[in-house]
Amino acid sequence: MVLTMAAVAANKDITLDKLEVQVETRVEEAGRQQKTAFVTAVDLGLGLTERERKILFNSARHCEVHKLLGGSIEFRETLIST
Image 1 (cartoon, rainbow, N blue to C red):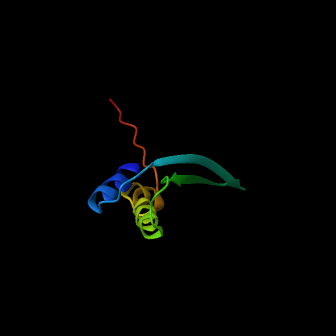
Image 2: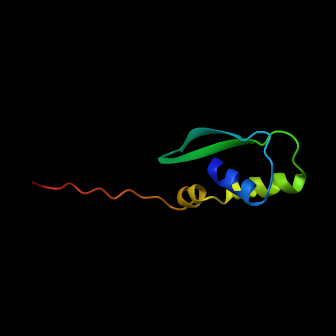
């Protein structure tokens, strides 16, 4: 996410005063179902226009990591006999 925002900022000639991302993981349980949530706080510092802030924030929201984790995830295990 940080690399994506930094790359977009460089590509769009946006000068960043600060680029800090904090991610908190929360596991929520409802009966037998378990849900993992990633709560993200993005600090872009000062000096950006509202348009620049939106561009960078949206780039973070649409990065490859979000695409990977936003879909359905399943685990397929195989025990190999030797």
